[in-house]
Image 1 (tube, rainbow, N blue to C red):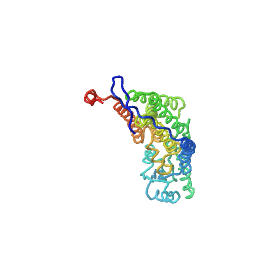
Image 2: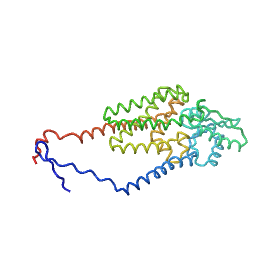
Image 3: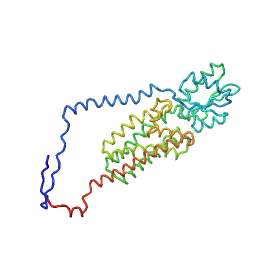
Image 4: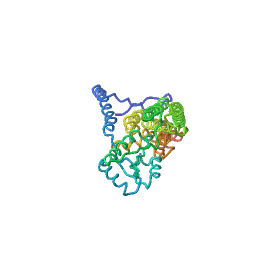
Length: 352
């Protein structure tokens, strides 16, 4: 359809602005409003209930230490009684197995000793896994008629023996990131100002969270600044993703990233149990998203002196970097689209 022209104050004809698109028919809007809530409820139930209902060990890293002649029967009984549950790592002696537990290479280890098997666990890595190992290995020891001794090599803090506080911290960090990214977008901050605001907000969240979790509640006992950095980086990863998506896709980006973090990242994080207890590929996918990577990084710096922190650290850094880059790119694209034609082009444009 041709567009009409209007006269400018200088007398030159200007093309009229196209009419705004008509809203969808009332029946279509009614159908969308009616189906939206059930669809979201179904997605949330699937994301939260399905992994919880299928919680079980899947290739859970477990160490076996001792001579091959002594560990072979233990390994055979574990494989037969728990098919596909464990991925066995073999170590020469108890010292090597203990080091692997402390480095988060394995969740626990069974040491074949002359006076009976000994189980090394790390409840700080996952109280649920530690309890599962005590039950599984204890059953095998009872079947062979030998007592089982257990040692918690890296114990969860006395203030939070079940890891409930760390688990509960995942959702507030996601919400803080969503709030920061949304606020920067809705307040109209762009470019470098938006990046500074996001980074500053995440840094303050990190300091406040470390003060609460470590200094006050005592549920973390690692390096205080490393904990603050982990809290802050996890927040920045979410906040940057929200603001970056909004800069490129408009306000719909806020809803898209919010749904991804809340309905996928949070239940798939494995913070309440362990990634290896979630059905695949949920356990792996959850570690690629900020909630799962953030929970893993917090466990590493809060209980294990930074062991196995590299993977989640890189994941969070990528999310944060890509989010901030998207914020800067979106601002640049918007500026180019809204800038007037250069003076040379205006002079050479034919008069209408």
